[in-house]
Amino acid sequence: MAGFDFEKPLIELDKLIQEHKKYSAEKKVDLSAEIRNLEEKRAAQEKEIYSNLTPWQRVLIARHPQRPYTSDYIGALMTDFVELHGDRAFSDDKALIGGLARLDGVKVMVMGHQKGRDIKENLKRNFGCAHPEGYRKALRLMQMAEKFDIPIVIFIDTPGAYPGIGAEERGQAQAIALNLREMTTIGVPIVATVIGEGGSGGALGIGVADRVCVLENAYYSVISPEGCAAILWKSSAKAPEAAEVLKLNAHQLLKLGIIDEVVPEPLGGAHRDYQQMFRNLKETVARNLSQLMALNKEDLLKMRYRKYRSIGSFS
Image (cartoon, rainbow, N blue to C red; front, side):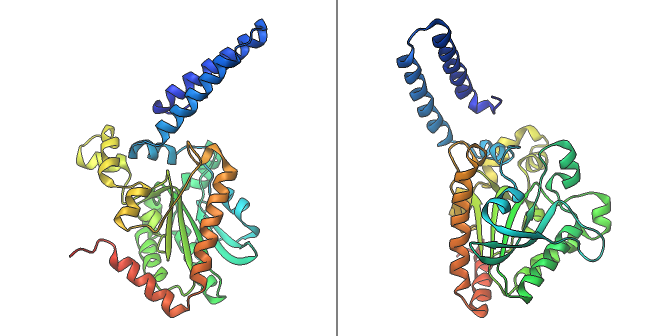
């Protein structure tokens, strides 16, 4: 199996275990005790490695190409999904998908960034980097949800909004700024979860929510570690140091009061056990939605206002 540098001890043990099993089968030799010892050693080492990940190592896991994406969560957590398209002004941005669905029978408006599994799909999805029409589509769907009193569920997974000339010409900054303003007044519950990358304004453009959750190995940051390193140290090679100082991982963000909840992942990352990850996230989203739906509109908006006013406060 291919893996990250910090996973090499596990890869070597996996190889050794397979070699023992193959030799045992071919030579009719009982190596069960040795194999069991190796498997116990691997389990202990796996727990040790993933319990002590650095911020940069968590960023690498957040970018793993086999992590579940927005469409995977919609398909697993929800039923009756009907995708809605277009911003009614320019086009349909396939980097940001959304539509109506049901979560345990409750009608919801769901949306999120969508990456691709291969080069062809990534080109179609623009690597999860939304254009202004994507953010305008998101706002259109949120305003529709408010009109029909439907709660909103959001999945964030983007390295950042698309920075190309066309996107800037069509008002990228304005589209994101408008979403930030309007989301503070949307009168229905909003639960947002960072499922992988949560980069800059591209993430925040659909991230102003009543409850913001972050998966254990996801990150949420004003800039990517590489971008930060290029600015501070003039070298993207300093990305691991930048990840440390940015405080971009889930537990650091929770301690700073920027997010509301850390969603546990299977050992090794969300890509290791889809079903466990789906169960964890469904419980989190459903519980938060249920709590928020018990509030009236006035209390909901007051709470959301206080939440964002308190970020970064000091005495």
